[in-house]
Image 1 (cartoon, rainbow, N blue to C red):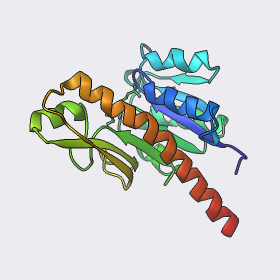
Image 2 (image 1 turned 90 degrees about the vertical axis):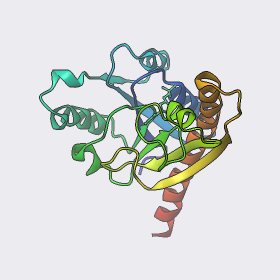
Image 3 (image 1 turned 45 degrees about the vertical axis):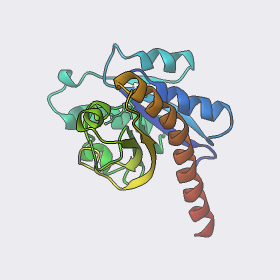
Image 4 (image 1 turned 60 degrees about the horizontal axis):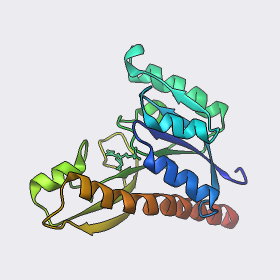
Length: 199
Ligand code: GAR
């Protein structure tokens, strides 16, 4: 195991969780380094945020590949090249296939803006508002082949206020995410280190 755990962050969009993880590392709250950003959208804002921090970026376009197996083989090559140890899905809007699940079993973690198993998939915040639930939250979970279905690692609850709309609820949820995700990743890394010392 490397001294600092080597994270590959996967993201498709804005990258506020990517920044939260990078900041936690810089501030010494997360004992890790980001060795690669994997992004499936060449227009995504997260790319600039990685480049600003001199973090290597692998951008791919799924439509340029015949299948998921083909693009995930290219991703795997990049992951091996930078010796990534954990795959951190931070707003990566694709299902992960066996090409990555098999070699990284138990080491792929996702964040989702609802209390899973409620409201999996896209626009979990809009789904919660439409359903009229009074509480929702954030889930961090291990990734399996399903849509937001893997074993839950941690969750945090938030009350939906009558005046909440998509924007206010999203802001409140993201505030939780930016705190919970780095904290949960750190706890996973520490647990693994303790287990390694014991064995
Ligand atoms: C986050 O809220 C994350 O929970 C969500 O995408 C957002 C990405 O924001 N992920 C999912 O919905 C996964 N099913 P960010 O790009 O600002 O980190």
